[in-house]
Length: 253
Image 1 (tube, rainbow, N blue to C red):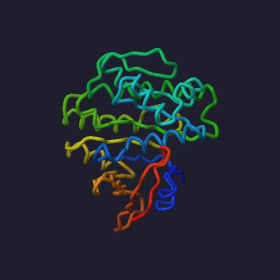
Image 2: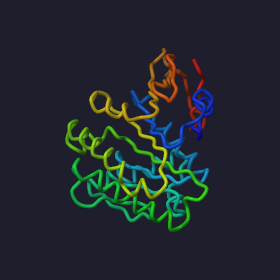
Image 3: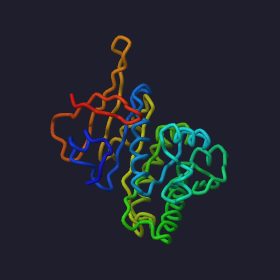
Image 4: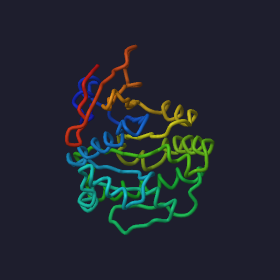
């Protein structure tokens, strides 16, 4: 089992199953779910793991600033080779940088062709990692944020559902996932509504963590609820949490 990089989750869930798919559902921005995802990513990079980040939400300069605020030295990890960024946002909106380790997708990016172009880039970077001998003794992780933004990029819910179906089928037989090590993946969903697409993503996930907040007087109270996990019984694991120096601290309810 791997670590969640959050001790309370490691204790409650017995660690994180390797090669699983984790969905963090940020029910509202005050819950600061993005900061939880960035915390996990930061700790994985610090441990020397290989990380592929799928940038869906931000222009690259905004993403780099978000990394900096979250304590992630992205330029260092890109130059050292253990971080790769697939800049989906830049590929869609033609905002291109020359940063080392940042990949772009060329040509049409409809729901029909986007999955294959992702697979092509993932295979190319995994090949580069393999040629440099970087898989030896390292774990592999993928992070994607915010996957609900595909709805706007691809032109609606039906096209996004189509993308998810095609993508799942391609990954079964693609060389990128057969010939090279597989990773453990984290997705963040940050949109209200779109129940059909969210239900499809829920169904595919190994773990689903929902984070939400509410106001209690002048205080923000944040909750993390484990909605889905391997071997989960009838009781839902629930926590309150706060942040200390950018680190989420959970307390079981």
